[in-house]
Image (cartoon, rainbow, N blue to C red; front, top):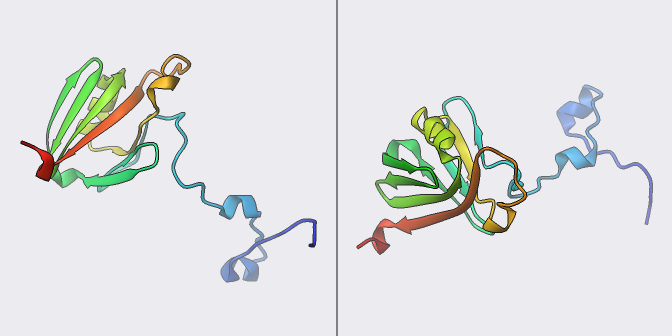
Length: 132
C-alpha cells in the first residue's frame, strides 16, 4: 500500500493546474445536526432530513402553515409535516418567504445542549394516503 499525499483532480482542473484535496471531494451524506435549517434564494422546495431518512416537498404544493411557539404545522397537497421544537417563529417567517431549502431534525437529546435560537427536535410526516 502506498502512503503519502493523494491528489484527485478533474480533467478540467488538471488542465488548469488546479489540484483538489480528496477531503473536499468526499460527500458526507446527510447534513450535521448543528444547524436546524438553511436558506437560499428561491429554492424550488424543502429537503427534510430525519435520522436516517430524507424527503423533499416542493413549495408549490405548500397550502397552509400554522405556528405555535413549540409546533409548526405545514400542510402540503400530498402531506402534512409537523415540526416540534423551539424558536420556530423564525423558521415560519423564512418559510413564508419561501427561502428555506433544508430542515434538519436535530433530535430531542440535543435540546439541552443546543444554544441555537431555532431548534427542531422532531419532524413528523403524514402522507395523504394515511390521513383520515
